[in-house]
Length: 228
Image (tube, rainbow, N blue to C red):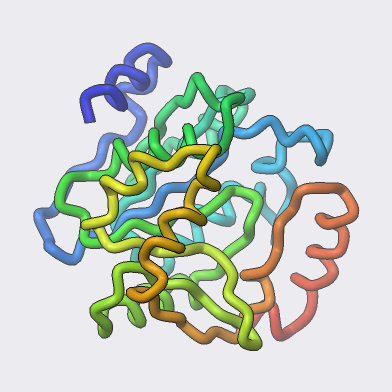
């Protein structure tokens, strides 16, 4: 926690919506990864329009509507452009100055900033749109099982975002690019993974390129995607 606070002070973020931990054993946290350069998209993906708002705003709205107690937003590339979207209650902002070394650096920075005692932490990328309904179902499925990992599934195919029991935060703090990041954690706990079946095709989206974004916008416009 100390290093995360140091990053915020260096970036002038010490007063950006500090969180107050409620002491609830069921505290659910989310880490949203928004530090990348968006090189293939050609523009900052977190600011792409999505359902009438910037994509990052949409993600925050959905997480909070689903009942997530705290959100740690990890920023890096062009971070100051994202700060106006992050100044809201329930969101902590962390600067990852090592973002060019890969997504795992953001996962570690975000996991480090999660409040002590969090019962679970969901890890979501800013460019992977999620819905409140899916996140709510994911959290509920995790709560009624003894699983260490929960993953949404649509039409028999797993998607994102994964949710990890708080006891796995030490594992998240050790992820590396060389061992495929979260994939290694999910492989390690494959036998303790539960799946939440959802009616949400958006869990398979990755908005990496302009073509992928255009196709995703068409999918978003379909009633099945909007009502999931």
